[in-house]
Image (cartoon, rainbow, N blue to C red; front, side):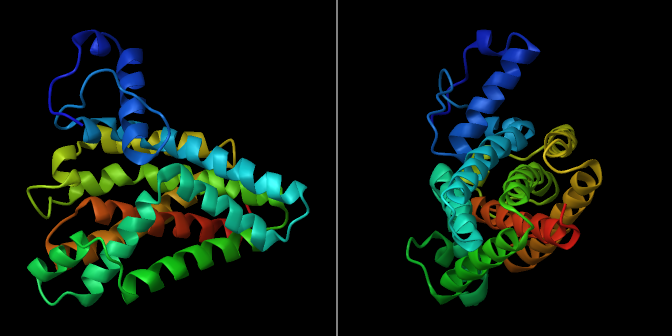
Length: 265
């Protein structure tokens, strides 16, 4: 991604602006062939935050469809859940899981801010990271496989994918940057408008797949996960990084699925 400004024609109207945001968000959050025209300029990743739940919808629909396909093959519900989660990881390139592992290793193994940041940038994974990934996948798979039927599991995975990404601009708005370089620094700080827009769009997109109450409660649960991660990140490294955003998505997704499992949608 470069830092050259984009073609003015791409920003000539609201629909063009939204299309640009979706393309930039898709390039950032997935490994799907999103190709924004021109280079992605400074701050565009934060501007595209309002489109994060839209990308979450795409990831959720693909992973939910994989779960349903596995169910049609009469696989065990737990196997179906693992297939759905594995599909989501393939679509995103394991972006969020990598962030969770790095955060766990850094926060769990570092002795001070500098040491924690160094560990988080290390491409190797440690014991804390491995355990975090195991628990993250295991909890989500257990909840999905315990829902009454693959249909409910599929809509739950869609709703969780949407809502867990809709809260990321909240982190980008409230928390300062932990360092002046890296993906998060290139993305720029979020705005209140982007934050609120993403939350509203997330709830609206999740609503048809779950229900209004679940969409609202799920959003609240995801925000609680944001607060927990924000407090920890602020104390540990003084703000957020790209890895913190990835870890937040994972915690938020777990929180939404816990609500889905507790209410059975």
